Length: 143
Image (cartoon, rainbow, N blue to C red; front, side):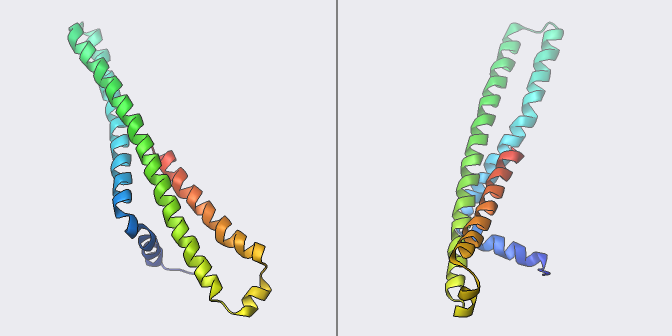
């Protein structure tokens, strides 16, 4: 089955458009978390360089506290991104499940005779559940 790439975008947009604010929150939390993970080693480098140069203790204390603050904020943003990712994934896949069930209920009787209820349940719930896990784990792996 050859489905054009544009159709995938339309399908994704259909299920994510009602959750625009959550998707935006997810994007902000992800980008913020990644940005802070890039910034924190720079602070550590500054701390080490200042220590090696015999810099003032106040500068070292400020750098150390800033490093800890950025690390905590990075972890908080990771938690927020995971929350938004899980929420978006489950909401979108629940809508997909509802659409699949509606489609199956509209099919003719020959289809229902050819497929057992357990098979339909596994196809609708099991396959969509795999999608939900993929999207929620994607966010965790990215951060």
